[in-house]
Every structure is written in C-alpha cells, then in structure tokens.
Image (tube, rainbow, N blue to C red; front, side, top):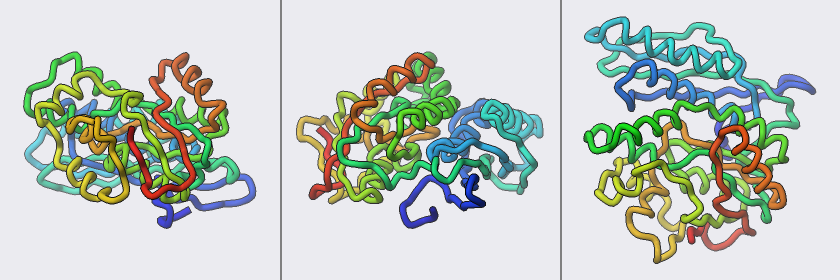
Length: 304
C-alpha cells in the first residue's frame, strides 16, 4: 500500500508472515504542558499504525527546538513521547533534532502486522456500519483554550482524549472483522471519511446526532471559535458532501474541524457494530455507531 488510496501508512510486505507499516507525523504544540504535548504528539503518530491493524514496533523522535527555551522543556516533551511509546509496547530508538524558532515534535513509527491482517481505508463495503471511537471537537477546543474561553474541566477531558492511544480500539476492531479503517486527524471527520468512501468506491451516510462531541464543543463553535483548518477542509469537500438543511452552521463546522490525535473511523459488518461498541465501552474506550456504508451515490457523503 502506498499513496494511491490515501491510507494512513505505507505497507511493505517482508515475507509470507510479516508486513512492515511505516508512518511519520509531527506538529507544533497545542497545549502548554510540554510533557502532555509529547504524549499527544506520540499518540497521534502511533495512531496511523493502529488504524492499519498493526502493532507499533520502533519509533524515532523528530524534534525542532528553539535556543530560547530551557532544555528542561525538551526533556519533558521527549519523556512524554517515550512514555506513550512504552505504553504502546514499542521502543524509542533515537531520532533527530534541529534548531527552529518554534517547537515541533512527533515520531516516525514502524510497525508490524501479518499481510492478511492489514486493514485499509479502501475496503469498506455496502451494509457496513460506521463506528467512531473518540469524540470530535479537539480543533475547536484547542482554539478555545488559546482564547482562554474553555472551562478547566473541559480542557482536562480534551487532553485525556488526545493523549489516549487507539490501541484497544485497534485490537477490538480486528476481533470484529473490520472491513476498513482510518484515523481522524487534520482533515476532520468528513475529510477522512471522504477518503475512505472514494478509495472504497462507496458512499457513506453519517447521522450528526449520533456523533459524540467533547464537552463545550457546540458552545465554542456557536461563538465562532473555529480553527482556520476547518474552513480549508470545508472548501476542499465542496461537491463531495451533502449536509442536511436542518444542521445549524456550528454543527456543520464541527464535522470539518481538524482533529488532533482523533479516534478511529471503523467500517464493520452491520451485525457486529453494536457488539464492537459494547466491548469498547467495557474497556473504557468511548465509541458510537454514527452511520452506514451505502452503494456509491452522487456524493461521497451525506450527513443527516
């Protein structure tokens, strides 16, 4: 697997029993706490491996760091990332650092999976139902935090969500014969869902009322606290998505909101979707059935 289906990672078959999964991701801080930033950036990079049904094996740090900040800040960022990689069962094997005016951190990650166990975004089937494993709203929430508009409790819940691994969700979806999967990050729910639909040559129907949201997301969106990336995502999807007229403007923008370390969007056989959600709930992983896969229509996605 390469670039042709916009999958979350590249896959290289090593032999009959092993395939190498390779990905890279890094970004600027979205929280003030350097340790938490390291955790979130690492969880975000590791998520690509989980979306493909793989197990993270080896990670390399990618760091940009300015001279004006104390070295202790960099130590905390790296510790946050290392602790998250250990939680994932992987190993940090070094990395590379350059001077830059703004801190940036992430990982290049290699993982393994049996060739027959790789889960692509290009294999969703009509009749599947769509399961989303983390609530939406991190782009809006992070923008609100910068404006000092969010309550401490809502900020705490968002941090916990962004720093959580998709490890258990990945393991569970494999037990329930997931047809396809992608993780929800910078292109937002509709952007990544559109990639899945196009690659699979199907259409998706999403029910907005079923989509889980982080606390205070609606309130912040109603106030116009929308990151610029959401408008870019909306512009890109013109002609590919239909939105029900009953959706309010703030509800529409939430669907385009760029996510940081978001959840997995899983296409799973319809008869197994509720069982998958129940298993994830038992593990403390929030999820919800938010839609279904249809034969290809005029638009890639319809939101009702």
